[in-house]
Image (cartoon, rainbow, N blue to C red; front, side, top):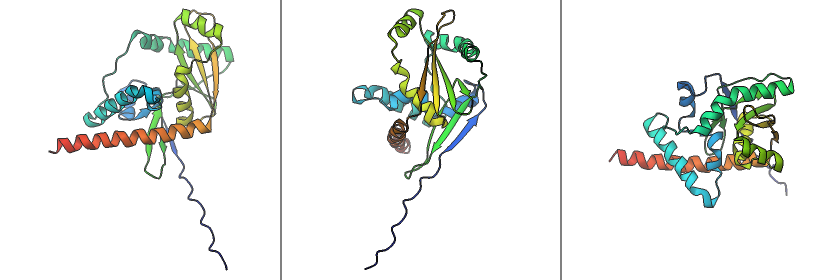
Length: 225
């Protein structure tokens, strides 16, 4: 008895990656990030069961942005201001020590094609390196930097942001530079693309957006009463 030919599995549509050459922290930049999962908040999306407070807080913030159609007010502490101020020096140090030039961009947006619908995510890399790489800069107090260098540990608090930037941009690797102006050592950690982690991020983002959309639907229903 002849068998019907097996159907080929449906091929996943290709994701779309767009680069926006806008000023970071400009009006256009904030508009692109509105209600969107970005690499900088990915650790909250990926939070474990005992860290759900971070995920819930992000859900509430993005729902508020969607409802108001404007970015939420975000707290900028001394550490964040230090990072903004030292970023140009950190990039210059990276370029000088490697004899290369990097490219600055405003925002990279990825549209992930899923059967359940498109998922829009994005990130703001500190720089693009060649055709395949990224640079992410983090500043650290000198005493903490000494501990990091002496222990040789990887700063795991930045894991999800780094892997998110690799996935969202479609790049192959990312250099994470830990910097403090005036300190003679700026360690650099090379992070390679990990397809298993990319799939894990994609699944978690889909679940997060499902919860976010349901929250917004509940709010819209209350508004119409």
